[in-house]
Image 1 (tube, rainbow, N blue to C red):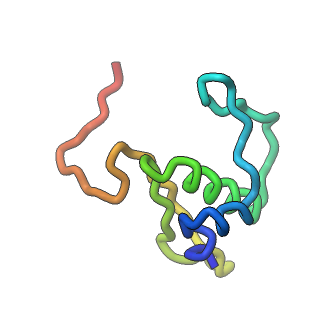
Image 2 (cartoon, helix red, strand yellow):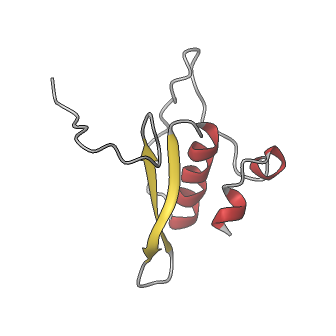
Length: 91
């Protein structure tokens, strides 16, 4: 099911929830904090992955004890590519 939702085809993407609201600079406007259930969070990760395909990669690292997919949303300038020695420094 996740593979279908991650399809980059516009017809498939339209079936996923609407993207988050953004300001004029395209920064996401935070919503009031609330606990998200698994289904909501999964949909949100898919939306983000579809909105920013050049800097994200969504994949599963297995299943939980409840049988749910354990999703990882990678955010990088080169998603899916291992870059040995690249370290982020705090300034």
